[in-house]
Length: 82
Image (cartoon, rainbow, N blue to C red):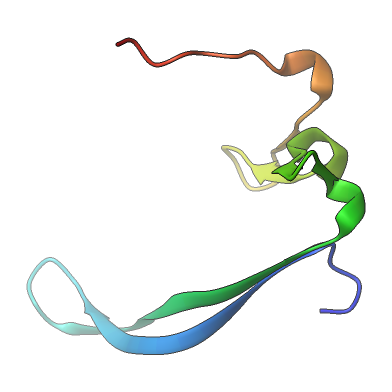
């Protein structure tokens, strides 16, 4: 998308017709792809690292209309234990 600051270029790997708990086919499909390239607007890169807060993403939350945003104030660093 021309308007998207981040996009993933994918190659189709598989299309799977999903089944219900009894094994019957459903009308739902799962599309699986391999990411072959990532395109990121340069303004979202800080020293080569993606700045999530600058991208101003909206995340799906519970309920039919609920979403969350991310801000720089909510960031924290967590180091892996050795």
